[in-house]
Length: 534
View (spheres, rainbow, N blue to C red):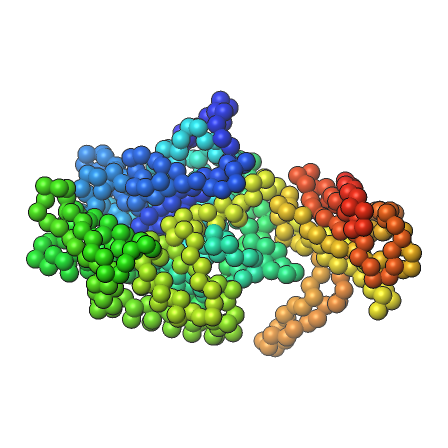
């Protein structure tokens, strides 16, 4: 039986992309319509705690055949119980190698089954007013391949035309607004873990930009069939610790109520107090109160930000962060990457709101810029950015090059416009400014071609020793058409004078299109069907 939040044939709701970022403590759900400028977080009662945030909790009782998910577990007072039926912190175990610890931690449900149940429950509760054409999911980079195989099995029952996957560091970087090709440090402070990663994104000048990996297209699973090349962020250094926001809540509760057991109502109050003390407009000495379990309760938590920061330092939070930072940057140095090579530092997760952590990170990572996107939804929003609003039909296998005249060399050369591995249709045009190459030039001659695939450098092994074997410096390019495309200028131009701005793009039919703008007259021309890309 297929699980579907909507009927594709009869639903007239908003069409768009759904992003699910499965987290160890919180799972984020965001939607962006095809005509929307920005994404929105979805409210999914009764399993969501806030808009877009579903606690990653499963309570399963085979004896009574009941399944409780997300915020409903907290509302029923089951989140703090000690029971083999309560499954939490399972995300990081999905795709990990088998171990005795893994089996002992989840005696009732495997982490893979818990994750499956959570995703299915979220999918069931997507509002019927939304028509999901594409589902994009996120995956931890260190277990990406195994995690992907698990997701493919889980999502086979989901009625959706396209399913895509993106690694979490790349999604976090995109959510923070960094460009393809950037190197960055990502600090992810979740409910039960703190992870630090030094990563290099795919893309940049002369390289294909990162996109989500398509797992299903047009209702067909692409496992083993897709020509798409996997492009994940490259991890240069990484470190983690099983310490997170839930532990900070316990520190606060134990500090303020040392003689009380750590019950769920006390921990909920401690978390609320921690969040309120992290608000930007709060003075360090302003004291806040949080009642435990309602107004009738005699228990009360009271703290100011200065006292909270002192507590976190005494309990060793900053020392732990220091060790993570040292280990991560040591990995970076082994890969020739230091702080001055970073284009940004991104902090995500619920703990990203805590001023003490932001101040520590900013001081440690100078001169790199600290970027603070919305901490909870940054990864999900970044995943949406990596799945263009138009349908991805394929990726370029060969590319497109433009022939130009090099006056100094006295010869024609080919300049790459689109390269193998780029997705199409394109989401934004590529601009090129053309200069005149001869006296009184009255027209521009466009010659476009398709490069042949050649390896410029290839590593071969001779007697077990890796040896770089160089290929041809200039790849052969096959022109699209026998006759060049001619664009007439509004007035004669002289050598070296900028005269035309060209905007190249690839449409849904794989046609190469160019828009021409005469820089002297502002005249605009559009030329279609310069050639088919492949």
